Image (cartoon, rainbow, N blue to C red; front, side):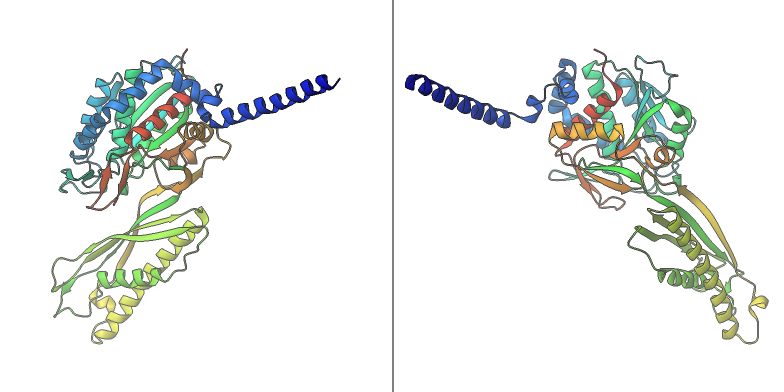
Length: 444
């Protein structure tokens, strides 16, 4: 009986040891290896997918070369055609059915097994072609150690390079997908473009769109799931103008605009919903000794809330009207011999330069779930963000959409000191590749 009890005790002890060993082995094993039924793990282990992942590990410099090439082709607002032509060549060279639509968007299609006319049969990956810089800007890329320096090199040279890299990875993998993958270089995202490019693409594909991903900039540590509403407005004031000496007392459009700007700048801006304004361009006049006949300012208003945005626009209009009235009264008092009407009245006009609608991706969206699954597999920690991108439009229409970065690091966007570092490019492209295939579905 004693020997039997010893055997039982030994067996129990061995069982505990075995259980401990199993637990230690389990927790020391990478998550991707433990969860063999994870769809992203299965996808990454597919030999066809492996070819693409191996290709980018060895050829990321090729992607950087394409980024430099595209960045050095000027693409100001409404002047993206030359850069678009270069992108169309790259699409065609990487097994895409390439074309340019009537708006100027460059479209590259990779047909899937589902019929192209079916609802939710298309995954759209878009990067905008245009930059905020005028046509005469020096966009030649310079090197400073690992950094590439040039206006537009990150926004959106990084995004364009990412979709070119994605096209090449898809071609190298020779994977066939269930849904059609559409890669697009779209026009009109910046400034006064008013999202005209993405609008045209959304109109073309309509209900066939299952998801939209805007690749904007380099960073892979964020997912933009909420589009910030914005209104861009030009305010102009015109008057008779005149000589600075002999016509002194004539109402001055520049002074009227300035009064309005100062008055609006005193408007209270709430912390929540977050809202902003920016006077980005001001112009007018012909010479230092001439009273100008026209002055104008371009204003960007943004808010997380449409109602707050409407309040800001109303405050802007009121401030500018008051500025014109104050300038008129001041001019009358400065020259008592003549009234403002004798000198000529000021005319105030407002012109809409563009409106971006707001929208938000639901927290339980399959699109967000797919991105989170890829991030878990890659060990990537990404945060949710709000911004104003090409994703605004599809989000406002109820189409699942996000904006993400294409890999690497950058800074100084919208300035002449903009920079990009390719370090981390491979990671960002692998992330984009796996997200795209997870959404499109792989034919076995």
